[in-house]
Image (cartoon, rainbow, N blue to C red; front, side):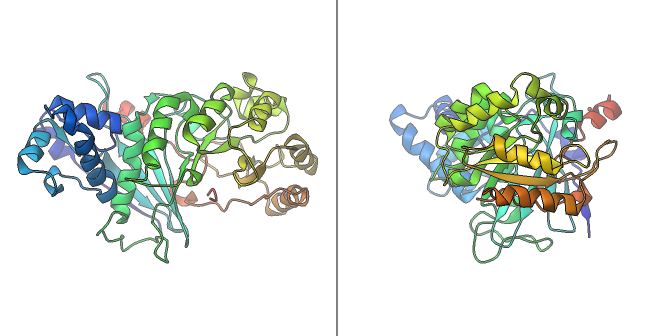
Length: 398
């Protein structure tokens, strides 16, 4: 059964004073700068930063008062200038299959910012839990099959706003020490972490927000805090070719390419970025992607569109194009959204396509649609920011 919970904070907003700056989601560099702001001696910065880091990212505390190995005097100094406030959860939806979607309202980035919103999705399985995070409000691209692509780009998310999505998810799921999981829905069993994987497959093109995405990956994978393996962090891109070497060299994250077509003329329509970085150029960059190997394969995402890109000839051409690249192909049944002109390929067509790819030696899992009933599936995300403006004025496998 699909459920949806709206969280009304109108009354609190009406009386709230000007907010202090939150440190939830801060990088190590930002924490050090914050400590200098309140007059911490330089000789103590490294030690104090490590203390804050542990409490914010390992313990998941939301108040400085809970940082028990820090003196009351120093905690008070922190609280005078900063908070550990998370972005506001406007709504939480629970799919019949256990997928959760949060609509998150971000703090205004400046005096003219009208508190933009993003969506974040949690996809649980028996042995792992995947969090799909957003990197932009809206999207800079206009992929014709993607619901997010119909939303106007507003701005990039900061690293702090990206990191906060994981903090919120772990908090809501009881994934910090001493917390209990929710009674509704499902979480992984067998003692595994409830959020074990991160995919940058939410709203936005991550490589058009490279610096903030790479900073977020560094925080996600820091062994003293959130401590996710880089092999369980996947950045998906439509193909911003010049940034691919930087992504591999700087972050060590796994790479996913939104391919979706084997001909430039078709990909120009489905993924207009192809006009700037055509297929041959994109695949050459994949061949030289830092760290790519049979143990760290590049995932190629291929949405199955009825009568558009799903023929046996296109499956064979896909195999030819990917020759020499350590790859696996995720076949994604198209997830419909209001107003789309596309349809999903039928099951037999997808199976025949998958068989051709598999028989050529490539893993070709068909992604099981998750969260369709709450528009949380791949390609369906779109925040309510545009509606608010008009009304108020605003599974990758490891």
